[in-house]
Image 1 (cartoon, helix red, strand yellow):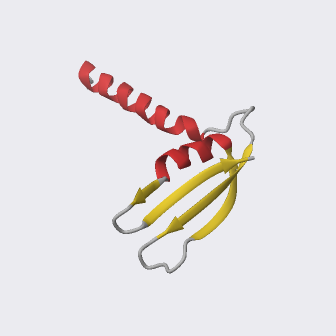
Image 2 (cartoon, helix red, strand yellow):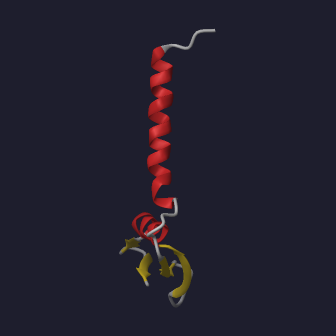
Image 3 (cartoon, rainbow, N blue to C red):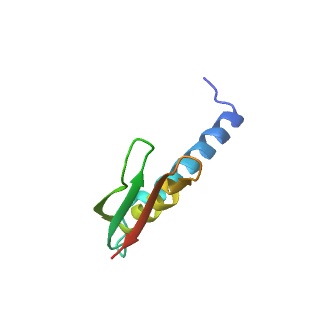
Amino acid sequence: MRIESASLREMAIGFLVLLALLLPMLPLAQDGTARMRVHFRTTEMAKPRAFTAEAPLGVCAAMAAALTYENPDTGEYTRVACGE
């Protein structure tokens, strides 16, 4: 059974993309713990809600970049802030 070089190349690219996506989630030795504060509101809520959690700083930064949004038409929002 022979694997074509194009499929090997696609598998290598897929592996590199997966590694790049997992990199922010990997704990590093210098990566400290951050307090993650999440404030959110949906259209069904009368008042905004919030919660806090502890996570590695890299995970908190990745989640803040991926989850923060605001919709001015509906008033929905999610804000993620990382603190020490």
